[in-house]
Image (cartoon, rainbow, N blue to C red):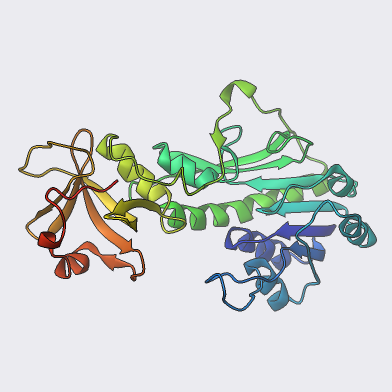
Length: 315
């Protein structure tokens, strides 16, 4: 079975390695990924994608593109004569590419479709307070994330999961599902089903605006919002004109009644709290603009409240 694998981030690497480990059944004839670019900092030297690194370790041929719609890309895929195309966290493919494989092209999506269609399903599942999510394989169609479902696997969302830890769990579960999907297709045992349009929910791209903390919300959803964005891109707020990212927080009670404006900072017994609409959020890990990531206790050791207005309010 001649396979073209397409993917870019860490999430796709376990799937690539799993397919390569079953080399007696599957032959990866090409790995497609994004081009080298700075990844740690804006002006850092260009680095290969995680998928390219893994493909190089496995001795697999790699094609890099940032334009899946280009005729040159379609020609490169056609030249290797794939039986099937496997996509895991890559770009949107045009029909001219995904219809090149006679057995079809399928995508691994990090949700239980049709829930959380879109660019950031892992983040939004946590932000919305889900306790179960999962992975889905589906055949590509012209409309993004709408294709017929092949297989699904549920994964619990634990109270201490954040977007990073959940992505790791889903990538492992996804790798097993990709291998099972390939075996089903190879044997002709594919029983697809259409997505239920009445159950659709969205997982839009994360932006500067929609990752900002709204302190005039209840405490529990604020905590879900923070862990749903950790460790990257991270939920953020403003402290006296400086951006502050918050990576870990807990809904907490104190012996002080919530009063005044949501976002009001309160330091109590060496701990950092911020008022929400209905209670207090304890900040456990943060990063002030221009500083390193630190625990709240470390932040408070250098924090002089008399340097700030009273009350101090995050916005």
